Amino acid sequence: QVQLVESGGGLVQPGGSLRLSCAASGSIASINVMGWYRQAPGKERELVARITLSGSTNYDDSVKGRFTISRDYVKNTVSLQMNSLKPEDTAVYYCNAYKFGTPYWGQGTQVTVSS
Image 1 (tube, helix red, strand yellow):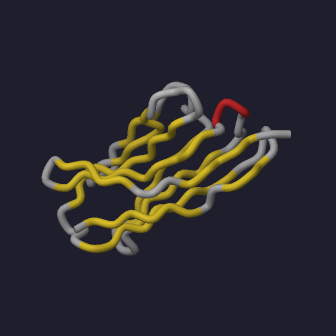
Image 2 (cartoon, rainbow, N blue to C red; image 1 turned 90 degrees about the horizontal axis):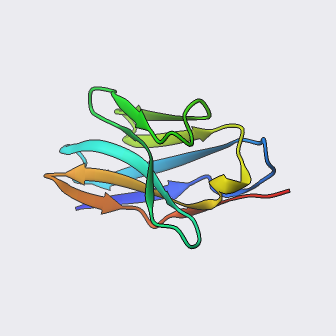
């Protein structure tokens, strides 16, 4: 019903920037909250940022001031601008969307921050 495809991951040096994008397709009209999660090796999946239909945003404390989530309601995409990247940001980043209270997930995109 809802398909989410992430792109933009890669290898970047500490202090660098990446922009992740997530394209939603299928039955997208009823999607409410969209967000980004990440899972690092040996850690549980955690919320990075989320954005509602009204534009309200939430960020994990570890990324506040460095990451910005945005949503294009015409193109049906959600993006995550990541600045001042740190090695601890290394993880697989997953796009998430809620429809009728059910979460949907993208396949994930790898972000590696290393010198």
